[in-house]
Amino acid sequence: MTPNSSSLSLVGKGRAWFLSLLVILAFTLAACGGGTSTTQKTSVVTIPWQGPFVQTFNPFTATASGMPAARGMIYETLIFMNSLQGGAVTPWLATSYQFSSDASTLTFHLRPNVQWSDGKPFSSADVV
Image 1 (tube, rainbow, N blue to C red):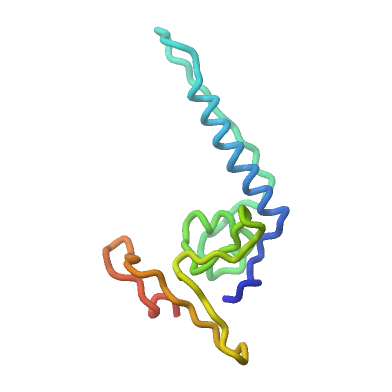
Image 2: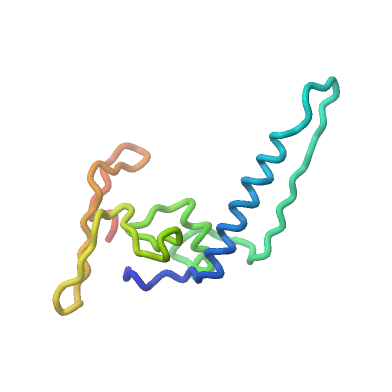
């Protein structure tokens, strides 16, 4: 993985942030409902989606490559492009990374004390 391999454009990032903000706003407005009432009111919040329908969240399929924002909510990466810092490459499961002098090798330094959901430690074997 290279720092320039992200397929999420600025437009896609903006759309993802907008949709996230829209969801938060919808839930906030729904929570601000009226006071106590003897009848229960049922409300439905419909949020339109303008992107392609997600058919799989498997990161190894070609159809999943168009949905990096959705994948980012499921899978954690070694590094990510932080739109809040102008698209800066930010370490996540890695604490840092460095290229060899001839740029033929990229070395990641993994964050310590990371565990899988079953309690097993996260290691370099899990990345390869």
